[in-house]
Length: 347
Image (cartoon, rainbow, N blue to C red; front, side, top):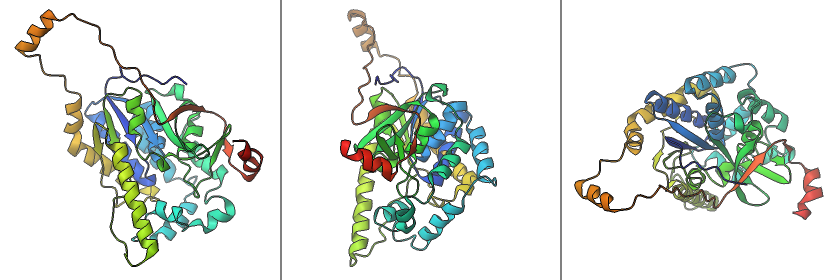
């Protein structure tokens, strides 16, 4: 599949990471960029970053997107009962480990082991459909990409064609919380498990300036060196921190709004999350403005050199995707035992 060429797009490309309810801080960041008339050239999002990015890419109005989210999250239609179950379980041992680590190491899995996930597929689809319009990637007003993990092929997948709802479900399918998403012969899960903040896909498609926004957990050292499980969990956190550093290193600028006061499942605190993102962005807005400043005028010596050099047209490098695969995604269904039993041995 031919990669989009982002090299001629003027402005800032956003790489938005996951973080569940903390991801609403992305809207505050975008709001600040819009207020300062900083053009947003495109967005690549993972998990909640994909949800927010898709909504904004459709109408380019951060305030309206935040209002739409708030209206839904405070409505009777929003089914937050299951999120409260997870939040309560997390709260009992908040200081020892992050939610993602607890899922990885078997905590909170009692329910998902028997049912496949905490939230059933139909409810997952209903929640995504309530906030993501029935649109395709071609209907976004700026380039938008959603990142997911192909669980069978161990591949980083970037969606740029097909149905937005399908792509967002695939990008946000946290293992054990939401069901795996089956499309064609692929099973997709939350993109954050393979790339927390998708900086490199944007750069490899030609983006010149990438602003990475990290709303993940901060690193803590609350572990007991005399307990094996505690040491294993801490080692896992170290690996995740280092992976995040490597994945955001090539970004032009990386922002980390202080969202730790927002519990990952506190979706009704959207206004506070947006406020945190906005205040952080305003305080650091000059970092992005400097990226878009025109180059200084040429010196006398540079002008003299230009006189004697043959003018050649600017040749922009072609995008060269590496480390990820571009795909489209259309109709999806839940990854179930019948599919695994029938097709897994063929892969």
